[in-house]
Length: 472
Image (cartoon, rainbow, N blue to C red; front, side):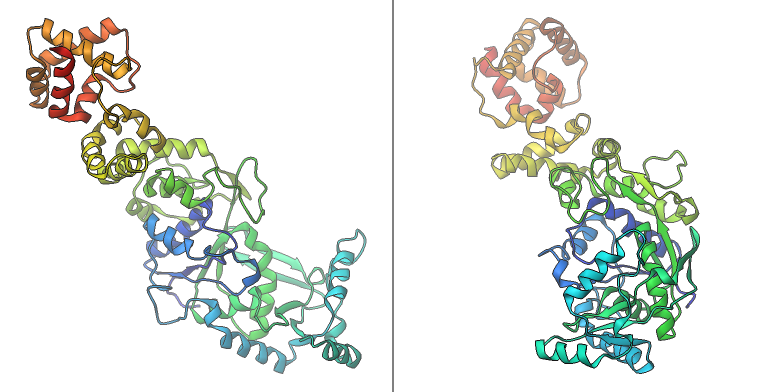
C-alpha cells in the first residue's frame, strides 16, 4: 500500500441518507483531513434491484449541507474515475475474465430453484452452513444444456478454499478469523452480467488506491470473502477500521427501511431546523472518547481526531434527547446568526407571512429567539403576535398586555412613543421600571415572550402604533 492516506465513502442507494450514517462519513473525512490525505466519494450503484429512486443523490446533497466536501468523486472528478460503478463495468468484466482464465472462478448453471433449496438447507440445524455445494465446480454438460434450452445465462463463482481459515486484520479489533468451510463459493458476476459487490469493491478500492476502509462493524462479515477475491487477483487489501454500529431504541439494526417522522433521515433533521454543525457535533462524539468538551468546531475535530479513542463496542446507542440538546446549544449560541435568521424567515414564510415582512421580522427576532427556542417548531408560535393583524381592544393576550403597558406608561407620565424610543436608543432604566411594575400587576402573561422582547421583535415604529392605538 502507498503511504498516502486515501479513504472513501461509497453509498449504494438502498435508502436515502440516514442521519446516523453521518458518523461513518465524518470519521472517514476526519481521518483523511487529520493525516493530510484524500477523501473520495464513490457511488456503488450496481445493485440496481435494491436502489430507491433518488436515494443516491441524497448523499452528495447531504454531505454538501453538512460541510463535508470530497476531493475526488461525482461533480468533482479526479484521476481515478469514473466514480460511479455503473460506469466501470468493463473493468469488472476484465477481472472476471482473468479469474476464469486462471481457474479461480467457474460458471455456475444451477437453476434458481435449486439455489433456493440449498440456501434453505444451510439454515437447517445440523446441516452444512455452506449455501452452495460446489456442484458446478466440475462442468456438467446436462446442466449447461438445460440452461441453454431455457435461455439462462450462468453466474460466475469464485472458488473458496475447502479448509483452513481466512484471516483479516482490523486496526481497532485485531485479527478477524473465519473458517473457510463456513463460506460458499462467491458469486462475483450475476447471470445478467452485472458484477457483484465483493468483486466491484475490490477492483475499485485497488484502482482508486484506497489505503484505509472505514466502516461500521457490519462490514466485518465482508472481510473474509473480499480477502479471497484479493488473493485470487494477486492484490493487497487496504487497512480496515470498523467502528460500532449506531443502535436506535425501538428499531431493529439491519432493517432496510427506517420509518419516517422520527428524525432518522438527514433530510428530516434539515427540515426540522437542526443546524448542520449540531448534527456533525453530535455524531462526531457518539461512541468517541469523552474529554469533557461537548461543543467543538470541525477544525477542532480534525486537530484532535484519533481512532484510538473510538469505542471498541459492537453498538453505541443513539439518543434523540442528546441530539435535541445539541440542537438547542447550537441554536442559542454556536450556530451562525445568519442560519437562525434564515430559519426564522423560512418558517414564517411557510406559515403564510408575506416574504418582505418575514424578512424584516426575522432580522429583528433573531437575537430574541436565540435566547428562547429549543427547536424550529417553536418559531411560529413565539412570533404569532408579530405576524397576526393587530386589532385594538381585542381579548387576545397580546392585546391585553399592550393595553396595560400603555396605561402604565401614561401613569408614569410618559407617552408610549417616548418610552419605546428610549428603549430603542438603549435607555432601559425607566423602561425597566415600567415593565417590572406591569408584570407584577399581570402576574405573568400568556404571551411567551416578555414585553421587552415583543418590542424588540416589532421594532419601535410598529410598537408605537400598537401602543398608541390602545393607550390614548
